[in-house]
Amino acid sequence: MSSIKHVAIIMDGNGRWANRRFRPRIWGHVRGSTVVSDIVKAADDIGLKALTMYAFSTENWSRPVEEVSTLFRLLRKFLLKEKQRILNNNIKFQVIGEIQNLPYETVALIKGLQDLTQNATGLKLTFAFNYGSRSEIIRAVNNFQLNHPGRLMSEADLTESMYRPETGDVDLMIRTGGEQRVSNFLLWQMAYAELYFTPTKWPDFSPSEFKKIIEHVSNRERRFGNVCAQEALELSIEKAECNKTAFIQGVTL
Image (cartoon, rainbow, N blue to C red; front, top):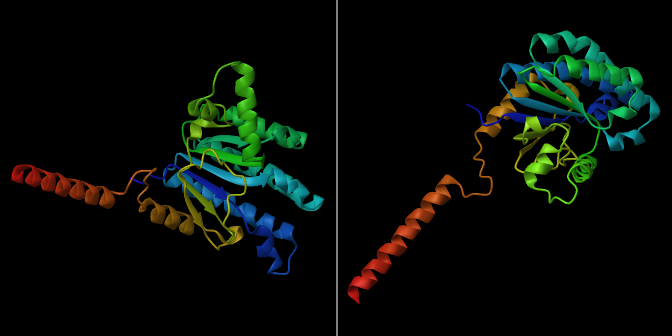
């Protein structure tokens, strides 16, 4: 069974994909939005426990107004289109980030679907929209201090104060589009995540590549700060040799 339970994806490359085809950037976002449904289905089919997708960062507000508006429309369209499939497949849906700054109609759709799926026991599907990890951490710390004045905060406390603690730590972070950075995404949750950067731009990202990446990373040895099995064996042999030498020297003396 794969050790990969929670995958996070930075869906990058939409604008560049469109520009290389001499199309406006928003055309890339429209095309990329169709890929989201396929990847969610693939994640559900292979039995992932959680999938978190970075759709819009707090820094993205600096983009052209038309592009930002398109991203909002695409989120609404996804919610309307995929609502029934999410319900039918027992998917627990949530959006993390400062959603109060989104258009009223979008917020209503988000909260409605979150309420409908709050008791779902299947894939935990999360969209990070108007999200920044540093802001999430600051928010978590401030909320904890307000609710527990004078109490020192532990790692477990901080984890439980995050937007969606039940998704657990990220096992694998995939970024499409060729860039190799994490862009203020789930910094706390990715402390021990495996990272995979693919040159494939998001509109060309397919379920087959998604599954191949998970299979490839599943074969990595995740150490979590420990030595690998081979190193552990070599250390054991070295220790045994030292003990043997010390014993022989003791007998000789």
